[in-house]
Length: 114
Length: 115
Figure 1 (cartoon, chains in turn blue, brown):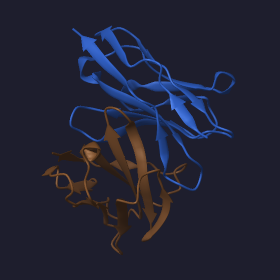
Figure 2 (tube, rainbow over the protein chains, first blue to last red; figure 1 turned 60 degrees about the vertical axis):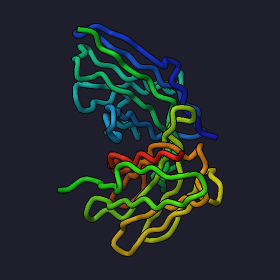
Figure 3 (cartoon, each protein chain N blue to C red; figure 1 turned 180 degrees about the horizontal axis):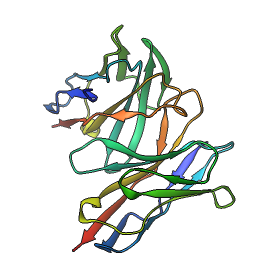
């Protein structure tokens, strides 16, 4: 069965510092991978997605993620964090091609210090 | 273009009651999915509807049900509420529900509190 692991529950960084959020997945075939962000009291917003092709994916708000099949990872990165990036970040894998069903990780809460 | 709307935004119910939550997808979107978000279990898939048909169902008891109307609007119903049903219920819509090709847009959620 598909699953997603986000090993870091809470991460704290200083504004301007670089960021890497970890995500590992378990999936039998080529996975469809997503990163979502959730601000307090809000729904989820898609940051980026990987379906195939270039393993380095660019997203919104200056985020990028790299798909590494050998490590079953899809880590999210940002070179310089802004205070407005403080939120909860979720990695997800699509259950299969012909469904919208997503399997989410447990999330990583990002705190940004000025 | 208006986003996904969910009503009501907040709801307080008593154990044993039943509740209906509503989701209006983005205009033109035909696929609607529902998720339950709790601090303990995280985000869990409830159901997915496409063209008024339930295409997938998560591992939830039969007290949880849903439907989709011809205009793609969707409702979910929870009967005989339990304290553990307290959660944020999120709805998402996409154009054709193929997951791989089209972005899902999430609504702000309905915060259900069961007392």
